[in-house]
Amino acid sequence: MKILITGGAGFIGSHVVRLFVTKYPNYQIYNLDKLTYAGNLQNLSDIEERENYTFLKGDIVDAAFLEEAFAKYKFDAVIHLAAESHVDRSISDPLAFVQTNVIGTVNLLNTARKHWADDLSKHLFYHISTDEVYGSLGEDGLFTEETAYDPRSPYSASKASSDHFVRAYFHTYGLPVKISNCSNNYGPNHFPEKLIPLAINNIKNERPVPVYGKGENVRDWLYVLDHARAIDVIFHEGKLGDTYNIGGVNEWKNLDLIELLCDQMDEKLNREKGHSRKLITFVKDRAGHDLRYAIDSSKLMDELGWKPSVTFEEGLSKTVDWYLQNPEWLENVTSGNYQSYYEQQYTDR
Ligand code: NAD
Ligand code: DAU
Image (cartoon, rainbow, N blue to C red; front, side):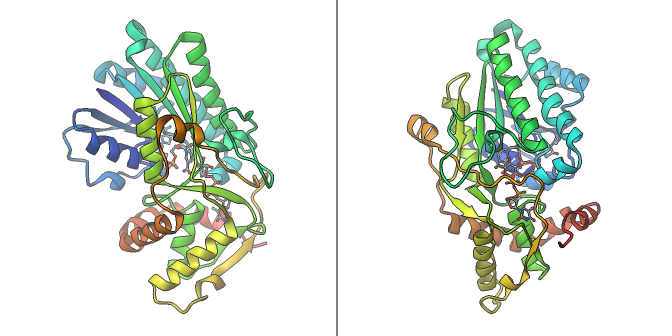
């Protein structure tokens, strides 16, 4: 089987590519990625020489490029992860999110539909989405697959739009699709603009750790390899046309999470207990900041037997170890443009 994975040089995509390349040596895996600021081939250096792996540099907004790639490689299936993924960036530049997340996704759907027209039933378009499409929860309740869409940031609005297009292609044209909506991921290869890797980088360098607002917002964290395992199971065993929610059953208030991280890092860096907590700095809140996300993954657990494999404390500790053991990775991705974006975002109140 020939599988096109888009966004495979990014955070989650790189783990999905590695899992498929190593677990299924008889599959040919094609990683299509534009290599934006978030794409990094260093994430895949350990598997780049494998015979069943090919990298294709390209932009999903470029329909002619997609046409050529589908004609040349004749993909059987697509796992679509390429996206602009950071909420703060979507607040400063919504159009970039419309381009890649909406237009790029529709380009892919069109190209797949055209090239698979002879026998749609042999193919699969699997779209990777987010729990943010469901909006924001109060103190109680969980997002289920039946929760009505209520996106509230430009990022989540663009992802919701792409989800709707994927479902529309299933209903209108019979394109075989699956969708999964996952909660916040963390783990190795995570670009340090997102909360956990940013905090690890700043604690390591004894720089202020920015906490938006009062730090009371809640996220449901999942180790990235557990997300990749869920994608594997849904790709192979999920029902066509269905949606699966994926979550960690692991809710944390941002401030509690940062305090845990500070304490773990004090121990690993032989710092006095409480030292890193002094770096916590409350900054201006994110515009339209969603209060709480939490996922009900019982459909995925009950129907397909998936469950998270690591506890948060273990996963976080492994993640910190990875960043401490890979200083060149952090240095590479935080050089150049990264600094100016960082300065722009974290102005104290
Ligand atoms: P990321 O930003 O780390 O990686 C995105 C990748 O897509 C990068 O390699 C980038 O170069 C590539 N890309 C961007 N625009 C492109 C374009 N126009 N053409 C081709 N490639 C392009 O993102 P991530 O955190 O790994 O997220 C991957 C997917 O999973 C996204 O669709 C995101 O919405 C979804 N998701 C992420 C999370 C999370 O916690 N990070 C949770 C749920 C769902
Ligand atoms: O829920 C899934 C989503 O999780 C994915 O779809 C997105 O691609 C991914 O970026 C993530 O979105 P969040 O906005 O939840 O993640 P982020 O790491 O940006 O922020 C996590 C929480 O931490 C959020 O409440 C904002 C807060 N925060 C974030 C940063 C970067 C801070 O307090 N300080 C920070 O410096």
